[in-house]
Image (cartoon, rainbow over all chains, first blue to last red; front, top):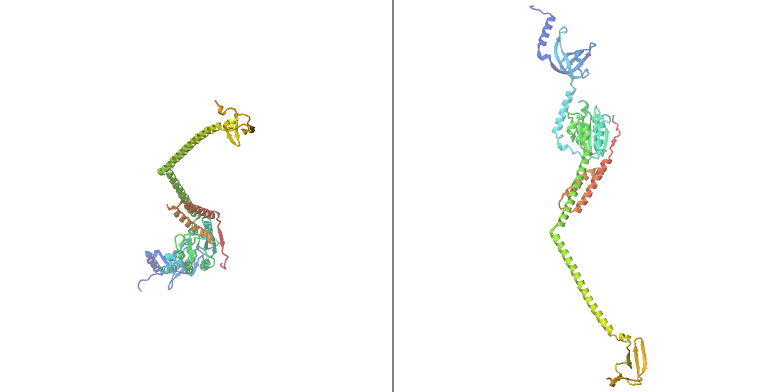
Length: 403
Length: 66
């Protein structure tokens, strides 16, 4: 035996070697917690293990305030630590500064696997996405009956599209039973209560909270839905499987409600546009016709014809006048002549003469104009204007003896 | 209740058709006036539906879910 060392010396030596190694001063360990012993002092003592090995670990009280997760046996974790040596105990251990739950890690692997598989099958393709109707009569919603999500949806639709009926199928949106309830909701609207569009989703939450919407059964229900589905999983940045397979993805329930229908303001805008167009066109047409009529009125040809007609009318009137004038003159002329002749006639009328005192003498109804035609003793009639005298001739003077 | 859906989609399409027909130069004035009347009637009908609308909400009875 040559040199000998104390236990302390050797432990010190090992400590120096190990703690001088920069690599060991800050590493992430992945393992499962076992033998978890929280101490009264506030320090946490535990063992981290994997399939084959273990390592002792401790988290000092000062570092525990950053803990976001509750540590317990069986929990899979990532531990940020430095590897050091506890000299008195002759052991090395992990001095942990930070723990991060490893549940997500596994979940994420499953998520990636499902996402890739479905994508390769073409189930995210546009061909599976159905068009969202512009004017749905009925809007179905699968979400929790409590919580902000459904209230937001009611409010947005009430404001923007009150003409659509909203039907809510209440469903859990997180936890073990959630996927089944969501699937039942989608089935309900496909089989029992047809609607024109479906909103499936929930409000915001942690990744674990949203996990129901990464469920394969839910994805399949959305894909096989005959009704277009708008996914509304309130998570701005990350996409769930439901988001990929839905016909449309909305970042929040409110946004989904906005996408589900054409806002009334827009419909009114369209109606106003058409109203304006109709009145504009008809006004234009009427004005055009008015112009046409004016133009025709002013048209030279038409006016010439009008003027010609006018001229001919005047000419006609003139001729009429002259004709009547001429006829009137002639009538007057003849009337005058008639009057003269009539007066002459009247003057020579025997009655006129007789009224002057002269009488006509007749013998046997023959007019006697001479004394030669009678003899004394003959009967004669003396015709006067108001009667006849019967007379016998008693004497005759004149005749042959007329000198 | 397919009426409401038909009214809007059909109405807006019909209005579009009417305007197109009316924009045609050759259409006689009296036919344009007929179309105009029909178009105005449509817009008034639609506006009335929008103005009278009140949101209807239905909540499905719980089906043994938790």
